[in-house]
Length: 296
Image 1 (tube, rainbow, N blue to C red):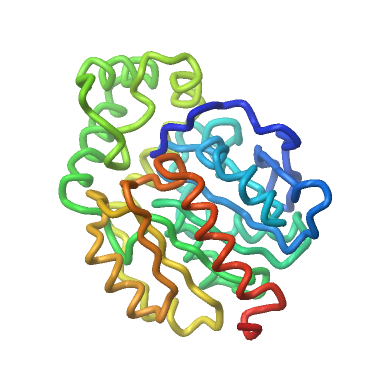
Image 2: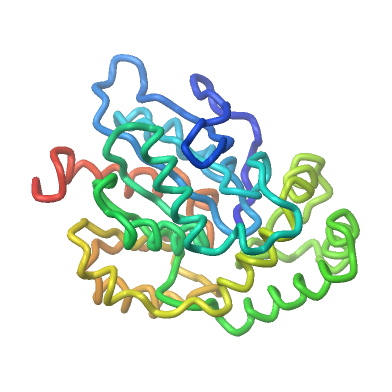
């Protein structure tokens, strides 16, 4: 999960509830910059325990390149509603259908971006129906289940949620962290004693965390299926990642015949570690497909 520098949307962006055929989803919607021809729209999906605010640092540089960006809280994430205890509502197929509904509500061919868990949900949506999308970028999101170390973190979280409230889990996680620990994995962020981060944590529905955490631990390799989809693919990551090791992401990019970007100095969250470099990589990739997948 990313650690956003601010929970305040950038100037010109609008936070609202996007109405879809599958309910409302909280979004931050940033238009292309004034005086800049609009090149396209991107839908941005956050990772496990993350939120739409993880993309706040990307909105302004992408707006300057002519791209409207819409970052969304998925069902049961932070400010989007969802059931507290019904894990079936958060099956990957359900979340993928939510993405297709969001795309339909935005009403334009979209560049789809998924960070970590969001990448696997984005992949599932594209495999259901790729027609609403111009391209797919998988950011720090690998071919199958997460690493053994991250699976252990998810197990600890699941065990804690079985006997503790969300507030109690928050306090327990903070007590376990040391000042030297940094954002290197799915569960390493948002652990400062900051009210914004605590509020985001408490906004997550326990069933969503339980269901998506399980998904991350059992996700099969679907790269061959995805490679058959007629879309341009982009695999972007930092130069270090404990959730899916970088060589694994390199191999996935090769199997997808995808454009590959490694952001120097970034780890599992390039969007917050190196936002300007990440935004530039996104826009450079999208620029090649302004008129559709076959334009380049």
